[in-house]
Length: 192
Image (cartoon, rainbow, N blue to C red):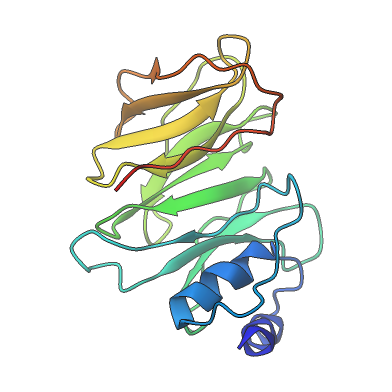
């Protein structure tokens, strides 16, 4: 199954992908035998769409650089590798996309407006990109709450990197924990 997944991606022109994309695709296809591991600190983790009201049809949002240049954009596809659609096309890094539970929006991290990632949201087809965060520092790795009303993310806006939560339109960001961890060692996930 894993070799089939990579063959599909290679034939579609995707040469530089996070290896963890194979893990998400294998999980979506029901194959958990010997999944590949993600390179440490790659930050290029696909988001497998699950839950919600079923409108998302199991779409997978992932980061890739088909040109081989250090320009990463977001793409979406069906679990079987069909229907690959490019969602972003910016000169900055667009990474860490997460599809909303209802499948209608994608929240992601981008450096399109300069160094230091900020959190953006867009429609699931790549239209209507809106910046949600503007604080100094780096905001990264956004994920939706299971009800789609909040977005959890990491930020070093107050010094050390800590998890934050905000409304789905970027309103009311607040720190939810006080942690001391080296940058890059944290990730956030919403509990079911």
